[in-house]
Length: 170
Image 1: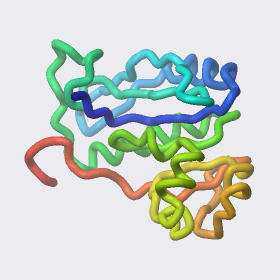
Image 2 (image 1 turned 90 degrees about the vertical axis):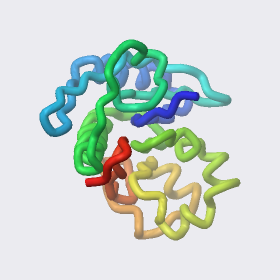
Image 3 (image 1 turned 30 degrees about the horizontal axis):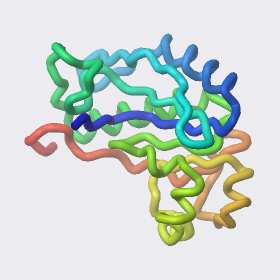
Image 4 (image 1 turned 45 degrees about the vertical axis):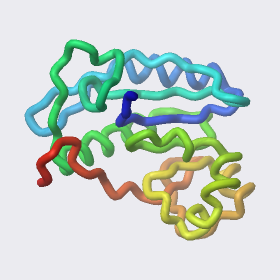
């Protein structure tokens, strides 16, 4: 079973915005400490009723098929957090999405139906750190002031960072 550290973006039915975001992500190379971390090529895909784009750094997750044969980067919590901030900087270049989040397997947090059904308490409390929602979804879900501006048209619970990806802690 693969475990991904990634930026996952729900574009609703806006396939063109997802394609534009995929094209933008190809140009990005991230840094984690002394490591240069490129991104895997991203392709929009249909998940249920919406278009999703997953942007995955190379050699960061566990068992990622596209990483086969590459040595895994053993990153500290600080390095993972730095990657996360850079992925949010990339997200700030996108438009036309509904929800997004960076982290380990964040897919469940970008599906509005799943958010309502499984995470309603955490949504209201504002405890889903790093969750970015469109102003429209923010209003539909009746979310409060814990969500601050991320970029025009979007609000979020600010990102707090990650834990180390290896057996050694910072």
